[in-house]
Length: 373
Image (cartoon, rainbow, N blue to C red; front, side, top):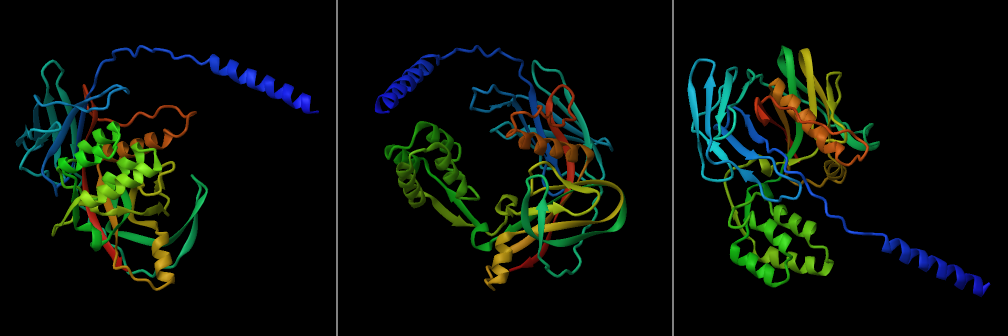
């Protein structure tokens, strides 16, 4: 029996060597495909006009390719011309003027060597939404797209009128005043200290994008170390040094990015979540007067059951979008969700631009404070 085991062990070892010898490196020439212009402009009445211009890039390219020599003009339906000027960085074109609700806008972008880029969109007329008084009654909701159950409570949104063509996007948010007003910065000198401690080059390159700029969350820096530093001990040492070196300050204003998304589901015939996404509810319907949602937050349920108040604010973000805005987000969420499925067909994200890709679409956004706990 001992000889048989030795014999089979030798055969397996030989097969292993043979298989590994069959692995060869192949050089694949990636064809030089035509680059597309990418336009990103989602506009609303609360923010000044902003538009970003860039080019598509190859899979082997890391750096974004921004465009800084374009002529950007937006014309309203009343004939008003709005010129966006280059800000000087990251392909961003800006104006001191604001979009207006209910008004159609036409975009024209001219770039040397390219055809004129055009698109049309509007900001929908504002519809004020309210959430009537409610009692939190926890239920278990089984989300059929991922077969996981969530602790949630029903929530109703009233629009105060019947909307003939309702297009909405809902997200549950929370804001913690202890952290939401904080800003964080990593200086170039601190980055050098991390490099001296063994920070890998790819991680340093990623951190360089945020150096000497105030960030809303410290997680921006932590995430890079978790993504690019594989050695556990090195990562822990770098994280400890990073937390010592990061500068911190408090500001009196809130930014949208300082809110944290929680889970939200549609609970109405005209609402749905897309694929595996559990944070965004999208709805399109006719003659709509209200929306029923399921607001989910396991930490909140635990805190309430144990009477542990954390002074955290819980909000509902309600976005009324143009058709292009809703189509863009629906296809974008679906594309991102399908990346984990090797058998799915490619999903093309919706665009309304001629001679380019990207999006030019208007929306109205409002935040409703539900309660503080």
